[in-house]
Amino acid sequence: MAAAARKKQSGRNKSSVVLAIGTTATATTPRDDDTKPQSTTPPRVPTQAEERGGGGRQEPIAGIFPRAGPRPLPAVVLQSLFGWLLSTDLSALRASSVAASSPETAAVLETTVASLVKHRYGRANPTLREEDTGWRRDLETLRHAELSHVASLVRGPQRPGKGYYLSKSWAGNLRRYVEAQARRRRSPSFASNSAAGSGATVGGSGGKEKRSRGRERAESNLMPPWQDVNADIMCQHRGLARSSQGNRAKRQVVDKRVWRELVLFFPAAVPFRAESVECSECRGLCANERKAEEAVKRQREQEIALPVLRALYGRKTGVPSAALSTPRGTPGSSAGPPSAARPACPLLPGIYHLLPRYWLNAWRAYVRDPRAPSPRTLDTALLLCEGHGLLLAPPHVEEFLSGERRALLGGLDPDRSGCVCEVVTPEEWDALTLCWPGLSP
Image (tube, rainbow, N blue to C red):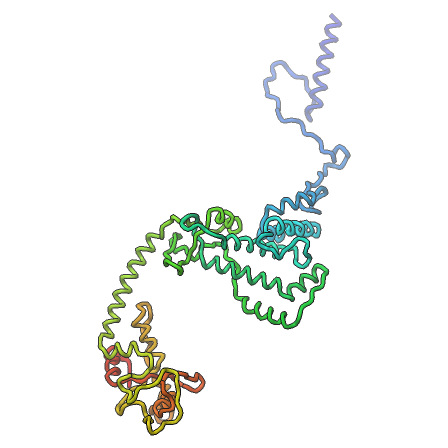
């Protein structure tokens, strides 16, 4: 009996000890009718700092880049990671991360650029060799290698009728931009700067350097290739815009393989399959515009229905042939002073009008092109003297009337020709004033 009581008492004491370790409250003896569910949360495992008595301070997490943590990734891993990124991604990474611009990361980046140029873009960049120390291992060089690779893909042989459309203007701009960048990199000034950064010395003559600088200034207006490669062949409805046929077409066809690789470098490109049809809304608008232009063109052709206006519209010599006293020579030829065989004035006696050539050219363009604006109001103040308001013939007209010039409009000197004019007959002038009442004699 006593032994059984001692055994029961020892069991109770053991239960009290277990509860005191597992909870922070005062130890109590469990009862048989206690139905409260026990907590299933696992006990907290102490960290290594707490075990060493560090007061709960946690060890910093290891970073990706060197000097970002106590255990950075090895250079081989960083190089493999950088190999999956483009130059634009690496540039954004360096701009947003301080650790990515550290000297250790810069060294890994140089190694990555040299490896990418050699193994991935070497075929399109034969001048960039890994063992050559004359070019920089930076993101600008990597971008040049990428664009050269894309340009070589676009220039490759294509199969018409299959694949995707690509803007011809974008492809041409890319080719010119890559060629300009390649010439700039071969220039002595760029080579000297690269050699200064790498410790080598490169010499060059002053004449070649001067010519290269002039070429750089001429090519400074070239724009880098824009991100949407098909921006200029996409209409306002975000469909395939209308294009002319033949050699003047605004688009070309590239293979699916070329397009897939092109999108990797320009992800904003809008795809248009070669089987895609042009925008239906644009076709309807174009048909309406064509009808309106044809109506305007017929109306403007009716304005020159008179034979005198048609003759004036197609005239190129500036002088009516029916008003010449003798046949003139070829346009642009000049002669010396008048002789007895040739009269001084080449025009028959009569009254003539002078019209500025800029107004007649604007009128001819207005008749020829339905989209051209109407010619502005004629201003004859340039043909009048300021003192008396009388006609002051331009020098080239006086030379023609005196016989010093065989052609009125040929071989004009812009410094001394003044306001270039054409000779108009009274019949032509009356017909013009009927169509354009704003003209004044």
